[in-house]
Length: 167
Length: 178
Image (cartoon, rainbow over all chains, first blue to last red; front, side, top):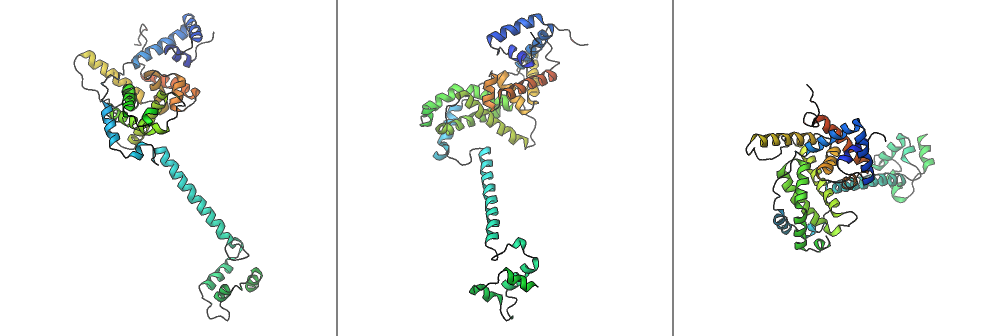
C-alpha cells in the first residue's frame, strides 16, 4: 500500500474513514514508520486543539428571543423584508445599476432615431450641427426665411438641402 | 419547522432549547468571544423564525442552521474588520486558582489564537471539523463548497496549525529538540 495522504491521516485520526478503508489504513500504519509518525503528529495536534475549551453556561436565550419577537413588526417576522441581508442589498444595488444602464442605452438609441430627420448626428459635420443650433435659438430671426417657421410648418430641409447650403 | 412557520411559539421555544447550546458554542468558536456569541445566538434564532415560512427541507435542518450561524458570524467578523477594535479576547474569567488552571487557560488561548490566525475558509472548515464534529460532506453543505475544496481547506488548515503549534504539539514519547 502507498503512504497515506494527508487527508487520509486526518480522516483516520478523526475516525471518519469508512470501515474498509479504516482497516487498510491502520494495517499500513502498523507497518510504515513514516505514516505512523504522521498519524502520531496528527493525534497530538488533535488532542492539543481540545485544549481550547468552550465550557461556559449556555445563556437562557429562549425568553429573550420570544420577547424580541413580540417587539418586531409582523411583516418582518414573516420574512417579507426586502433587505434581508448583505447579499440581498447587493442584489438590489445591482438591479438599480442595471436599470440605469438600460435606461441610458435606450435613451441613446432613441435619441439617434428621433434626431434631425433623415440623418444621424454621428455622421453630420459639426458645422451643420452648429447651424441647427443657430436656427433653433432663433439667431437667424432677421433672415428672409427664419428656420423656426420651417420647423413649425413641416417644410423642413432634407439632407441634400443641407449639403447644398454647406457648399 | 412547519409548526414554527405557523406561528407556534411553543414549538419554537422547544426548537431553541434543543439547539441553543450547540449554536452558542459554534458561534463562540467562529467569533472567539462569548459576549458576541450570546448576541449571535439570539440573532440566529430570530432568523430561524423569520425564515420558517420559506424554509424548504432540502437538507438536514442542522446543516441549514449551521449555515445560518456561519453567515451571521461572517457578517459580524466583516463588521469587525472595518473597525479598529482591540484584538479578539476570549472573554474567559480570570484564573480561578491553581497553576494548572492558569496553564490550561494559557494553552487554550494559544490554541484559540492559532486557529484565529488561519485564513477564513480554512478556519471555518477546521472549526466545523474539529469542534463541531462534522464530516467533510456536511462541512461542504454548510459552507456551500465542494467536498474537494473542503478537503483542501482542512488539510492546509491542520498543516498550518501543526507549524504554529509545533512547540506545544510534540507527540508524546518523542525526544525533544535541544
